[in-house]
Image (cartoon, rainbow, N blue to C red):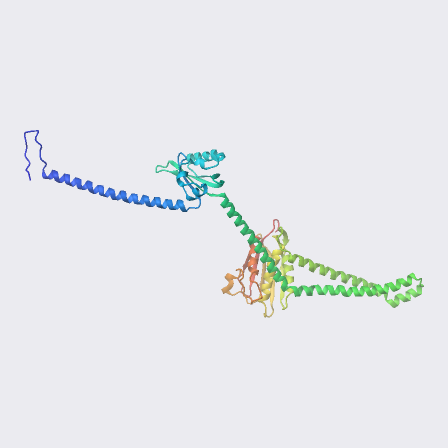
Length: 443
């Protein structure tokens, strides 16, 4: 290596020392290492950017809702594939458009005002707007949100929305499904009521047969009395003497028959009124209850329903209904009657083979609620099935003895009336509690 020396000639270059060359080489190594590191970071960032672009393109291609990204000046920058499908153009054609030009001309001032409001207030806004398509216009429910840069300034807009046609179609389908469910529920209620009525036919026949037979027998008596009076009045018209008429009256026993006639008329009237009451109860019982809600006495409705179930029983069961207090509620009496019938019929079925079978029925008011309790002294509800007792088609009865819908429908009816049907915890037998809101003004 050349040794360093001093020169008196300024034109002669001064050679570098070994230390100086070492520093230069070290600086070059550091610079090259920095360049390599920068290159690696740049490649990683480029890869991440490319991955992000691929991810965004995948989202824009797969999203079904309308998605439009626009710059601060309103120039379209990106759109989802759903937009190009609606407009019938290529993405390259759409991104060259001004945002207002994509919508109906009459709505462009409104869209411009919305964009200005979003830019000034930095808050999202919504509007209905008609997107221009080859087949006309497609109404959209749009949400316009501001797009902020890294300094928090509005750098553009993001518009998202769904065609109102699809929303309206979905709403129509939902409404149709709801109507179908309501129809199905009404059908199930009527079917369950018919099943209950079928079990009561024997009792109905018996109840109607008694007063009708009584009326029929009294009509025969009235016919006999009418014959005797016809004989007497015929002799009166023929001019019979007073003595002969007195003797005829005694022979025909007309004085006694007049009293019997009044008794026969009274008995026939009682029988006819009994038939009328039975028919009226049947009419109320068979009504579908789909009309307007009315104010009615829960105790009276429960009494009528209980009497009909008890009429159709083939076993000996005592019904205790002494605790039926007056409770006025607002609802559909036919549906509530069906609930009570289901509860009492279930209690009757559970009491089969039970000695001294008893069902108690009570109605009282508690804190603005009318409370009906139907309890029996049967074997009760096993713990294993208590959680499923209100499930549709769940039944512990033998095949052909029940549909498994009675309690499920009753529970739904109680909810529709703003009330509650629940199984109570009892030491003996089973007890169900029906709660219904009292009618306004009822105490």
